[in-house]
Length: 305
Image (cartoon, rainbow, N blue to C red; front, side, top):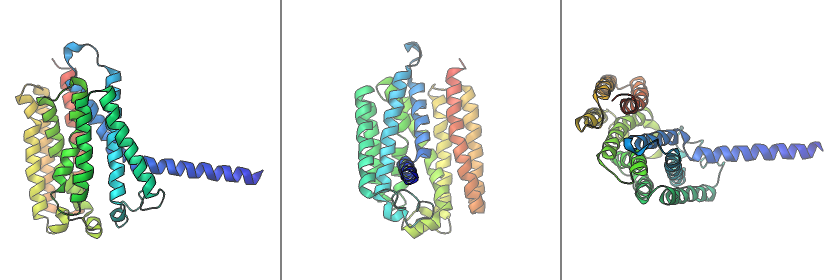
């Protein structure tokens, strides 16, 4: 009897560990951001004269996008398993740690990706499905292999990473318009300084794994600093364009400008110091900046006339 209970307990532990490993494949931290920006794009695109927000359509749009993004993250880990095993921060991922096999990861990734695109096509609209498929293809088949070739890969990664709010917009409107392009632009330019601070923090890991990120090929940090500052300025400019085109009002304009200047100042502090502490501070600032800017958009639309 005790032996049977012990076997059952061991089976439960192994099952729980495998489920956790599959969950890790989806990169839930990134997935959470994808959910939020997709929902944001949907909300901002929903016509004011169309009546109450369609919660079912919103759910379908967010779910389909989440499935595609999770599948892309899993494929990325399948393709980079050998490199992940050389990096301290990724060595415990499901594949390098041996908790899942390559065949299991690939099957899981293909299933999520295929179901996600099909779900969007069937329950949302073809435009949203096409955008999600584009994000998946560029992330998996362009960004992932380019990471081992050139530091310019971050621009491809930023492109695919900036598509979720456009998917949300298309989910609500059935098409792409200027608002979706502006949301894409904000998220695109935000990712570039955000990536720069991550690359600086983990530059030794990236070098060990053979990834030629900017801080690896430019150990003095000159190009990294130029990259960070120029794209922070571009982000500040793009972030106020919704006001120029009448998509947001003065409340958003004031807040976005203040946040952009503060983010630029912290980027300048990193440029002066070029330390791990300064990079970590800048990274945290980027994680505060983005939700605050998008929250301003929501408040501006929901509360203010």
